[in-house]
Length: 133
Image (cartoon, rainbow, N blue to C red; front, side, top):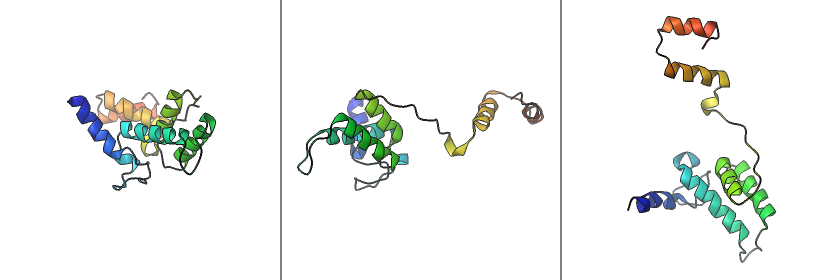
């Protein structure tokens, strides 16, 4: 029953692209869970590989190019597209890591240290100035 409940929470959002297109609720990527984003990319890839009334099936290379274009243009989550392509046997280049809210690596380093250390404010300032944090 738990497994069924998990899939029920994913499947209603399945046809949605990360830009909100393709589903009546217009759910955007931020509102989709990881599983739903991967399922959307997998569904798109599978549809590309199948023959349709308006076009022939795309070969693997064409489907890869199209899926990456969809991700680049914001209709699919880039990480989900990479996961689908890797599962389908395509070579996937590692994407540069994007930090949340535009943080720099140094800002992330400081935030991690602040979260772990229980130091008085003056000691934290001193360590930051000396770059010991």
